[in-house]
Image (cartoon, rainbow, N blue to C red; front, side, top):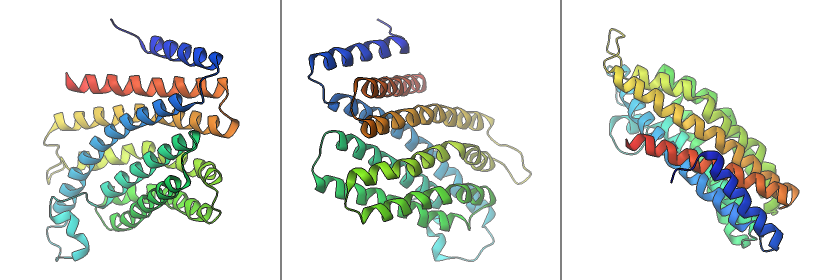
Length: 276
């Protein structure tokens, strides 16, 4: 039987309302759905990072053929791990995933040590992202443009976590970090044109002609699918934030349930389309 997105949302909303009326819901199920839905978007993001890394490395090798060896460029020479910009994007995505996990944990009253390790993981990934963005700013032109656009947002999020960590109040830290983390998520979406420029440039020959038009079209589709999921992830994260900030009421939990269901349905549809 086929269900539309509206049906999925309707069923999800009905279930949450029944649970709330019975007095049995504490929001745990809604936040777990949120966690799982965000993880599906993260998996799509990893596909983007892998393609970005391949393009970034190929582009660097083409423009750096006449350079002397520099140990700081080691990640470009060998196909091991991600080159700097791709590393930064991946670390930013991991930081956002861990931040969303912390929001879900906060709703269930998880132990303080889990928050401490989770917050430390967010901070370390943001620090890794910023360090590699500095390295990326010595790369090829399109890479430099993307790195320069992302760097301020990573830095703001990193500084917010560092400042709030000293207060030893995890709820306050997570709520205070929402703005910068939300802006970082939005910026990842907004630098997809720069990501595409890197991918397209990596397919050009020395005369500026594109060698593989099918790959360029596939890159557009890959990025477009991810943008759709990032937009819905933004809505889901906003709903989770409001559910924590305002209290887990019928209204806020219904909003979280609807946004998470929409994200999950879109993720599954995009995956199914890719598998055709």
